[in-house]
Amino acid sequence: MAKTENNLKVRVDMSRNRIYCTISGNISKTDLEKFFTDVRFGVADLKPGFSMVTDLTHCRIFHLAAVPTFRKIMHYIANQGLQEVIRVINPKNLAFKQILNLTSQIQSYSPMYVNTLEEAEDKLDAAVKRAGLRFQIINKSIEFKTDSISSEGQLVDISIGGCAIRTDETEISPGQMIQTQLSLANKKSETVDFDLDGNVCRLIDGGFAVAFSEIESSKRELLQECLVQETRLTTRS
Image (cartoon, rainbow, N blue to C red):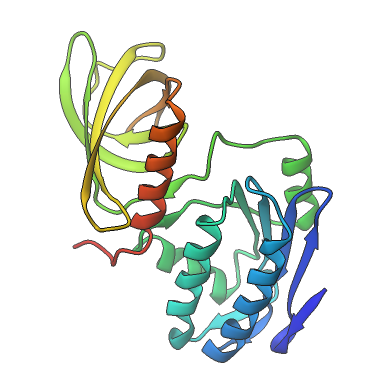
């Protein structure tokens, strides 16, 4: 187990392919930089497709100067083959509210939030896993077409397995075949256009979710690369 100041801890369970992080106290940039080193060492022992559980229940406050390092950690682990993120939180903590505010404004992956470590373990042990790490891409438009309509919506989140779209379009129902089109940035900051077929798997509040059809491996890798790259970008206006 590796430790840093302010009770920042990193623990790796290689048999379960998981990394456990504890962040408590008042967190400064210096604290988080040391913690980042421990995270890198921990991730090096894991295989792609690993899960991360971060315990924030005793984290009191993130100093503003630590935010860039927090983003840097998020981008790093997403680029190492991260499959799932679960954050254990106390909804009454100021730090939790800070993190929610931060992640609502930046390009990032979308974690699950639970109230206890036991609940996090239960979700992972029950294999409640998505097809891939979900990413929140701020203010990203996405076009979609079915047999009867052609329209546009706002991307809620996306992974290599599917996406959620917010739209006013009402002529959408589960089971429909659908074509989606969107543009993302690659590692060279060049625009890459993606045409992704799938089906509407369920309706959500203000929109619907899509499960992508099987994507060839090279296209999956490029899509994942671009989704990770988008997390580097600054907040969109």
